[in-house]
Image 1 (cartoon, rainbow, N blue to C red):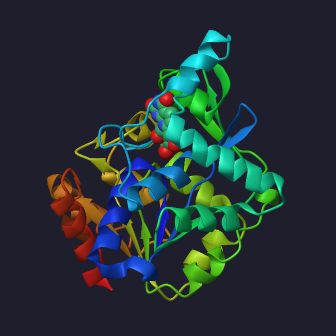
Image 2: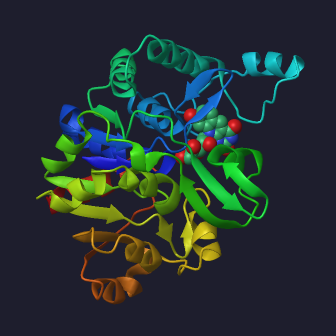
Length: 304
Ligand code: FO1
């Protein structure tokens, strides 16, 4: 099973599915980046994982649907609406359908399973929790919704901290604790430790399920050569006073991991990370080709 954020995680999750896990793969996905806009519930990380597993994701951006158009968004702009969040026309169909099922009383886990079935996905994709609990980012420019920080402000404001709103009063979504507890391997994907993995582990019961699981807990570093492969992880580490390195991430996950997977470029940090009490495995973690995604997935499966 995998704990996943969005774009970086989706590459590895795709590799795991391709390497024969298929219906045996469960992915617990962050919903702290969810957004409510135009009366719709948008779940970017759930959709990124779903579209990627369906082979439909935009190959350039990693999020959204390949070849999607933005005619509805343009029309909204003409009417005076804010259009900084890029909602594609086909992507909108997912949000419309999700929201209408939620309004009929379905839970987010059931809606997600139904949408995945519609896309022909065999793997099980689970939201971490069912409520709307957006992550807020405390910045120099004030407290921002995560998507305002990421997309509207392009990650420019300096970060001081995060608030996972209402998460401490949530429960894990149906099925989540069970898949974690019975997993042979729990992969913490190369996602941002603060805004992707942090919210998942903050849902009551999830961290304990990971700690108590008999499965091997393996994290893949999202930092390679002191830089994030995608998104603001390196900037956030720096601004929050952590070392901007794979070791900085390994320290955040201390107490949780059996294995930390480090990129070949960071092999020299292996010894100091092992001193944290974690076994280190060195691989190519830059998943820039289908082959690299599958190779990393195979390496993780061999650890099991
Ligand atoms: N990222 C952007 O940089 N710009 C966008 O306009 C944008 C729109 C968007 C719409 C749907 C969706 O599922 C994802 C979208 N993303 C966009 C990606 C998203 O902001 C982040 O990558 C994730 O929330 C972080 O995992």
